[in-house]
Image 1 (spheres, rainbow, N blue to C red):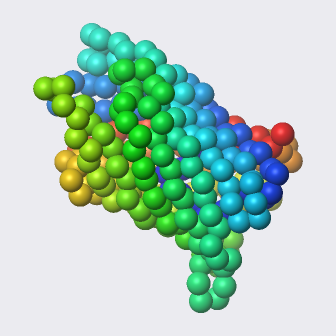
Image 2 (image 1 turned 60 degrees about the vertical axis):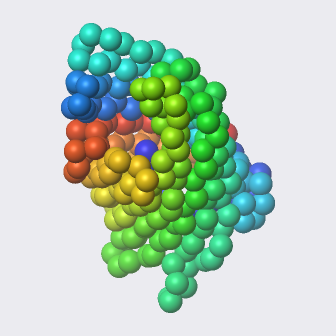
Image 3 (image 1 turned 45 degrees about the vertical axis):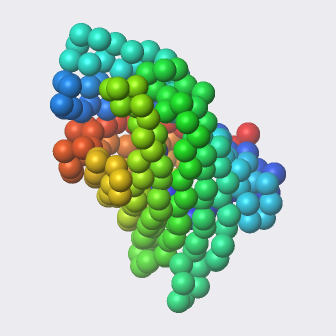
Amino acid sequence: PEATESSSIVGPGVVQIESGIRYSERDAAAGNVDRLSLLDSLVRYGLLETVELRLDWNGFISQELSGQRTDNGISDAALGAKVFLHSETRQFGETALLGQLNLPVGDEAFSSDSVDPSVILAMSHTLVNDFRLGYSVGVGFDTIKKANGKEDTDSSVLFGIQLERTYTDRVGGYIEIAGAQGLSADADPVALGLGSHYLLLDNLQLDAQVGLGLSDDAEDLFLGIGLAYLP
């Protein structure tokens, strides 16, 4: 469930399914927003030794505004590919490039009604004592519906930095700071996240995350729990 994009990809012919539940709260200008996402999912498929295909979907969403209005529906999805560029060396970190297109398949309350692209460069380095440093930076575009019915496409720099530690062969954890810096967009959400994972079986992992907003545009609180499965 982490926000910092990983530099790793799955192997050729491998399918990995990640799915879970995410809850967030935010004190917005229009009121308090409580949001629950069910089946928040990512499907990864190793097409080649260096190419991974991805289908990302935020699932079924229930959103409540100040306890007065509730919207329910499905979210947009994103279709993309991650290309592995460079293995880790002493001078250079493991590197991959991810490109995605938002697919406007969601219900009206949760859709941009537009195909919006994003491109992210991800890198990671092995540190001492089972620590690993990962970071990603890129640019994303988001179509926003205005009150007058018109649409504007905003752009933002997307970023994340994560420190991960492996405690045992089954348990690990991380801390990260991730968010976006608006270019043409007005919002600059930045959040702090803490997470852990536990390998239940050789092909089944439990993930959990909690986070706090560090800026006015970020969610005040978010929680997530899910499973990663290799069929």
